[in-house]
Image (cartoon, rainbow, N blue to C red; front, side, top):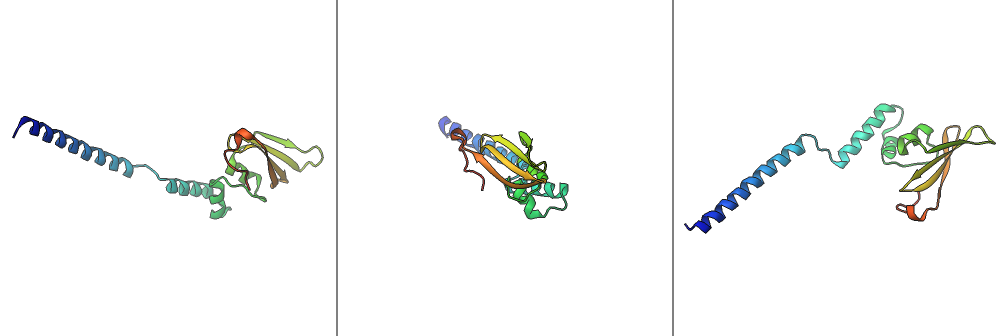
Length: 136
């Protein structure tokens, strides 16, 4: 066998050995803690349910997705999209508040709360923020 053939076989053997070691290490890593998107979603839904036992699972799923809907409580809104940038109490009606959020994704949004319940919301137009359509 010529030295060129031996060198080529040695390189192939070394690459094969490296591939086996790399695949084995990757399998070990994957089995020891990497979590997929669906598993992470389920873990977050479970954590939501543990923290808020009265909320049905379907509600926690919507909250983990970051959804907003009329009738949700202030606590649900915070769990879904976080603390607002500002809370302005109404000068006319003491049980009304306007919660303002500013994000790169949605621009500026105003959520109108009445007795701690979300009545409605609106989004101010923002040309540079139009990454995602307004919430529905």
